[in-house]
Length: 292
Image (tube, rainbow, N blue to C red; front, side, top):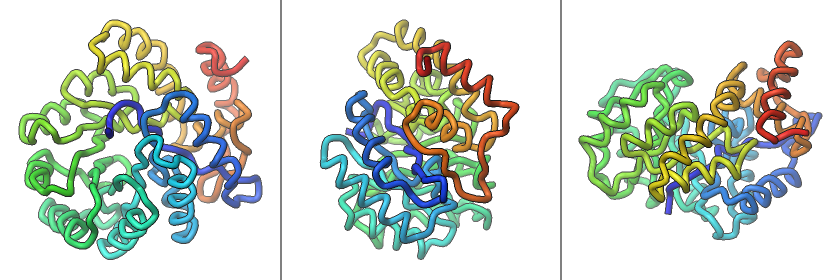
């Protein structure tokens, strides 16, 4: 069930910085209407590093309730302390998430053995499917393909979101895991290449602003229509690029506000998109029909 275009959902905020719960419901409804194949709340794009633990838990609960079983919800429950990751993952399970996305511990730079023990401890403590998440540009910690291979036989570890910046890593992982181990792209610009190497979808930033097209792209590829998927991918490459012109999710939140989907709230230390980028983001959204 976890395949296709899963959105790394932003956490909408009011101008005051408070979470906008009504807008969160609206975004979930919009994604379901557009054919998004899964919702991933409170990952990196969902402000997991700037919201409180209480807000984090409530966003998971609100998302699960709004989705109401219509698509999988993969809750972001990673932390740099194993004990905290266990507690967040327990809440993800109790809230009704279908699986949890657990990022490699950030800042403290564990060894590969430390990563193995970290994820093993979570699976021992909580009975819920886990998706590993490797994003070394954000965490300063790169989980090797060999470590993924050690973890993959664990029945509770079902896959990985790979965002190391090198699409070849998917090829390396694919060689050392079982056929049913789920590989997902965490790099929108590289998703087509990763799917050629064996990924079955993406946890996507771009899906926040172009949910229908990201869903169509994945559906086309997975149905065997690679040429049509390639056309859609080429159309969206400028969007993939511009959404990282500043630290994510800054450009994505600005774009969604410009599209009238959310308010303009963001929380320090993240700030609003620099004025110098407004025109380029707007122009690229307009070119692909996301803005008039």
